[in-house]
Image (cartoon, rainbow, N blue to C red):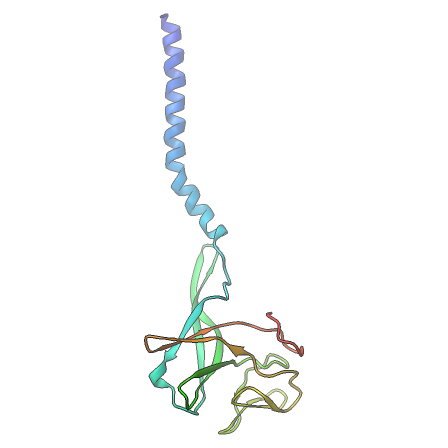
Amino acid sequence: MATSDRRGFLKVLAGVFGAGITAIAGIPLLGAALTPLLRRTGDNSKLIKAVAEKDLIVGVPRRVELTSVVVDGWSRAVGVVGATWLLKKADGSISALSSICPHSGCSIGQKTKETYGCPCHASAFSFEGVPLEGPSPRTMDPLAVEVKDGLVFVKWERFKVGVKERRPA
């Protein structure tokens, strides 16, 4: 075999070897760059820990701010995503209602010992979320609740305001 043929073969072999090593080394970097872009954000199916079940008193509503880890691209933050009214009933079941008013999106508070109320337009709701007075087009929005190992979890959702039928926002 001639010397020039051997050198050409070694150059090609070195190039293929170098390209292979570069490709192998680049896989983790490519994965790190693309993972945040492929990750789903805003997943509403996630249950958020609200409060310990023992901290709820039968018949007494409790407003709880729901905090969650929010991942957006490469950033990760812990923050309040919403608030809910939790009510433990005499049979031990727990209901959760969104604290967002279905009329105009204001924050619903407790108006009296037996009602919730919206300070923006004087709406009142029963503890079941049924409108008692005011312009609200529908009941307060119920949220899914699960109790696991003595902790209450709520599935947070936002709904369109100002419309009669309940639709996700």
